[in-house]
Amino acid sequence: MKKKKIIAVTGARSEYDLLYNVYKKLNENPNFDFSIIITGPHLSDTFGYTAKHIEADNFKICGKIYNLIDSNQKIGRIISIGNQIPALANILDLEKPDIVLVAGDREESITVTMTCAYLNIAVAHFFGGDIAKDGNIDNSVRYAASKFAHIHFPTLDKHRETLLKLGEDDFRIHVVGNPALDRLIETPVISPKEIYKNIEVSNKSIDEYCVLIQHPIITQTELQGKHIRITLDAILNTPNLHCFINYPNSDAGFSEIVKAYEEYSNKYPSKFTLFRNLDRLNYINLLRHSQFLIGNSSSGIVEVASLGLGAINVGERQRGRQHGENVIFVDNQLNQISEAIDKALTDKVFRKKLEKKYNIYGDGNSTDKIVETLLNIEINDNLIFKNITY
Image (cartoon, one colour):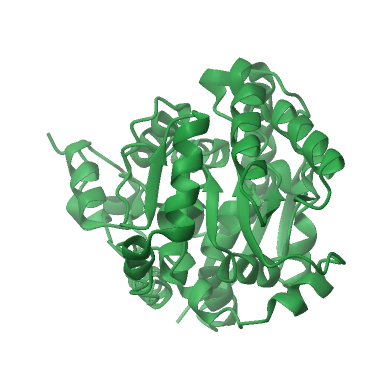
């Protein structure tokens, strides 16, 4: 059997972590010739040059695209998209893969699926059909990417229904759950003491802590500084609770969030610890031993229920998405956030539910389903040339 040549395109730490297990299994399987294109914030020093984690994982890298405009303005993102397309097209035209993989709803998903559609290269898109009613541009990008894609790996049956409503052929759609849970479950357990040593935290007084991940909302860029300070104040006002903060993504408005993080972590070093990026082992275990996750990261919706962890989702981001009983939605209001923190820490009924570790997004067996599908799928005109079904 001829090897299938597969290239994955990754632009950010978030979706790389979601699909890492898929990449690993493809790389180990002798039926595939697998490589990765690195682009976007991965290659930015501002966001911690997370490409180093991919390089350390020893995947073959067939291209690096330095497209990101280091800007806090909305225009920076669209210029970054424009920079990415020609470089991406040149690499794919040279490499001539059988299938290209891309995930989610950020700029890479639209640039990759569109470029592959024009080059008649089969592209598999992950997490299509997901619905968030938060008004974020990511929703439009996700749907547009699905219309360009030839193969769909949605997470839930409800997402499959959405793709069918968009006019996608049923034979293209493979509901697989979320492969992020595979790696989450497999990640070795290490103690808080080991974590603190690994991440060079010397504060011995940390007992209970939370993890904060807040991403900007580009339709509310002018409010990002105000909103994150409300969350930080709610944490500050909670006695005996430390907070580990991870950097936001690169969307417009990130600099005001980072400014607030630096201000609070410098002013209250015994209360807040700020990181640009944590490697996966320490990040997952930091979550594992925490009291709750707070902010608006999709980790709270998709992943942390499998760890028995509560998630406080602050603001509009992620609203309307399918979620488990571990998620508490609140507005950017001090009293609401404080009440949610109190519930996450002290509500016995809520914490009892968390112990079940039930996650609607999967059971940890997604990767094998995905690899099997990619192995058996036939690349032909029926797959490449798309029509709307209605």
